[in-house]
Amino acid sequence: MKILVGYKRVVDYNVRIQVKPDGTGVVTDGVKLSANPFDDIALEEALRLREKGIAEEVIVVGIGPADLTAHLRNGLAMGANRAIHVQTTDAVSPLTAARTLLKLVEKEQPGLVIVGKQAIDDDANQTGQMLAALWDRPQATFASKVEISDGKATVTREVDAGLETIEAELPAVITTDLRLNEPRFIKLPDIMKAKSKPIDIIELGSLGVDAADHLKTTHYAAPAKRSKGVMVKDAAELVAVLKQKGLL
Amino acid sequence: MTKILVIAEHLDGKLNGATHRAVSAAAAVNPEAIDILVLSDAPDAIAADAAKIDGVSKVLTVARPENTHALAAVFAPQIAKVAAGYSHVFAPSTTFGKDLAPRVAALLGVSQVSDVMTVEGPHSFKRPIYAGNAIVTVEVDTASIVVATIRTASWPAAAANGSATIEPVVVDAALPTHTRFVGLQQGKSDRPDLQGAPKVVSGGRGVGSKENFEVIYKFADKIGAAVGASRAAVDAGYVPNELQVGQTGKIIAPELYVAVGISGAIQHLTGIKDAGTIVAINKDGEAPIFEIADIGLVGNLFKILPELEAAIG
Ligand SMILES: Cc1cc2nc3c(=O)[nH]c(=O)nc-3n(C[C@H](O)[C@H](O)[C@H](O)COP(=O)(O)OP(=O)(O)OC[C@H]3O[C@@H](n4cnc5c(N)ncnc54)[C@H](O)[C@@H]3O)c2cc1C
Ligand SMILES: Cc1cc2nc3c(=O)[nH]c(=O)nc-3n(C[C@H](O)[C@H](O)[C@H](O)COP(=O)(O)OP(=O)(O)OC[C@H]3O[C@@H](n4cnc5c(N)ncnc54)[C@H](O)[C@@H]3O)c2cc1C
Image (cartoon, rainbow over all chains, first blue to last red; front, side, top):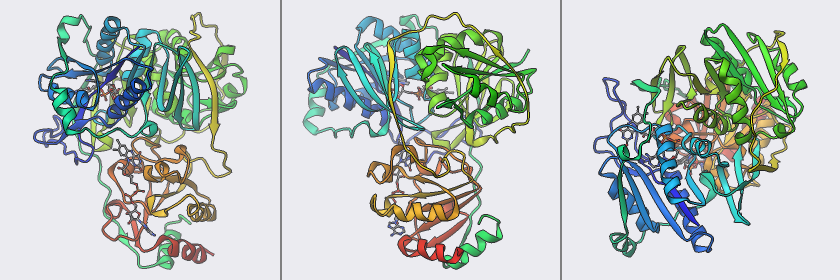
């Protein structure tokens, strides 16, 4: 089977995000961009399934502007067989991303689609669930363990109450949580090899996706700051302060 | 007409308090009506609790054996049907709501608003992005239904002095069988629930081991607190995953949060920004946690925690 992997580029998780003073966005010029950490985990899981002989082909997908191609090369260097770059200069909402992925699913007929549970920029946590709905297939979100056998995925999910296990008939959508695996590092020879792997470039406009969006982001603001607190010298003083505040 | 449908979260026949918080957000929209939808194999006891929530007009129940477990693929088509009479559908931004609401939105052909912090108007909301490092205002097209998840830490629980009517409904929706529940492994604990507790004590990598975590449990019990942890502590296997606080764990707003042996990574701080008072105990005086703590104490946690217990008496 084929596995389609969402491979989104985001501002690196170590970057301290600054909101532009005029409230039109966050500063992204010159900041380090990396793969969404959850997408590296999605790709790693797909590669492991291929290494176990469960999948034959792993395809990374990116939806975004022209310079995304370099990012997709990293996915190829990590081990994906090929990449699909759906090009657009517009902001892509999760619904549009899901509709776009559905078009690719119809074309590629994958047995599994693995995406991150959330992208760490917009933190939307929607795309996988929306794709599963539009495709009318199972979703197994927040996965921390995946087993594939007999045409189904048995997935352990990190939920608020603990660990839930569900069974999903394939094809299905899985969204990854952090403890699913530890992604491999890219080695230099793999970067060289990746140069010859194919990247399909498709214009978003040519897919016939309804990109109508119902949401507009009208303003960006910095979060309210917590004021700097006090330091206490020992346990006795801490207890005294907490008692005074009525917290003990 | 503004009518809001709130999806009840429940487990083992009990209504989850996150539902009360979603109702608070719904009330902030100033709607003509707030109704709660309970999907379950046996909804009666849950519905009776939901009917008590202030501001609720009706509690709708759909009793079907397929609803025994909260599977998004099974719940979503039913919610999409019931949503027809509403301008808004709200669910709490818990793993339950996050799993479910986008599936409902996609079936309705609309975008979804994640993690509503404040309501600016019926179609205007504030929500965090970049792990809470920016707050955006989003406007939903006034012609489309609003599907949103509610950031529970931003909202108080609505009081429970009401008496809404309970109305069983029959939903004509074909339900898939492609997704099946296998099991749930729950952390069993007599301690307060992390998500609703007024006091939380969290331990980080500095605690050092699963055995050492006993000092965190002991101190938490002393002050009647729930126990939480950093991702590093969960990854290292000191505690189970459901105790993780942060961007990818639980977002909480206790009155008192005590961070012990936690450095204060941005992803952890996201989870505690709305806490009333943050206390940090760390042996490194330069740890970033002290930048946001209300009260800081530099020192070895293994020495300080017993001293605190003794000082409390
Ligand atoms: C107001 C606004 C402004 C934006 N501005 C920009 C911008 O300047 N530049 C820009 O590049 N994007 C921009 N975007 C797009 C945005 O970054 C996200 O791609 C989109 O909103 C999806 O949200 P998410 O990634 O948080 O979804 P989530 O549902 O959190 O994503 C979950 C998973 O879906 C998959 N996925 C989602 N989107 C993509 C994608 N595009 N490619 C591949 N896989 C994907 C990934 O596997 C991801 O882990 C903007 C979006 C909005 C709403
Ligand atoms: C995409 C993504 C999502 C993430 N989501 C989360 C999340 O939801 N929640 C989360 O917590 N993290 C999250 N992280 C991880 C986060 O970046 C940090 O790695 C993590 O929070 C560190 O945990 P820690 O503070 O326990 O460990 P460390 O950073 O190792 O800090 C340990 C601290 O303990 C102190 N210490 C050691 N010994 C003692 C002692 N004897 N007495 C007192 N103090 C002592 C040290 O001085 C140090 O400050 C995420 C990361 C990524 C990339």
